[in-house]
Image (cartoon, rainbow, N blue to C red; front, side):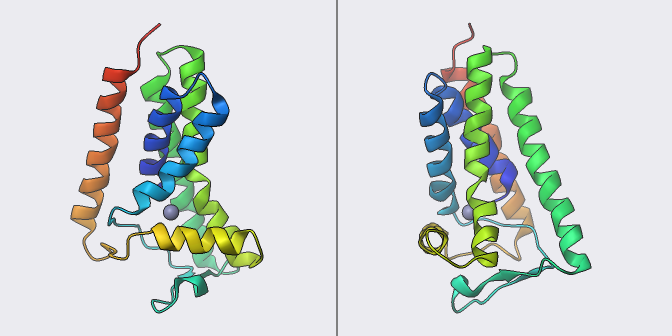
Length: 170
Ligand SMILES: [Zn+2]
């Protein structure tokens, strides 16, 4: 799932739990794995090498030109997620905004941790990666970008609508 989608989901949960930032972070982190269970589309990363038989062998080649382009895509995805979260929550109290940002960042963090695992295959990253793979939908909508993008846009819109209904202004 794109970082933008994860960020918005984590942002909503973090805003709801903003009275307790540790809880906001925890809920954001947990939401990553729960939302990864939904079959989804991910944009192509040319530097990524996937072993369809065993995802534990997946790797990213961080030495080539492709990686720079991939980093730009990932960076755009990351910034877009944070901009949406900021735009959605900045008119609430500073506490709610902070909770939303903490939730969003912790919802994103499992993906950089996958990269960390690929470059340093040791515990506790191995167990975390096994868990990430276990939770991740086995059906990937790789060749269905239209459904894939639309379904994530719907998740983002629903989360933002829910936020306007359940989080009080004060
Ligand atoms: Zn993930």
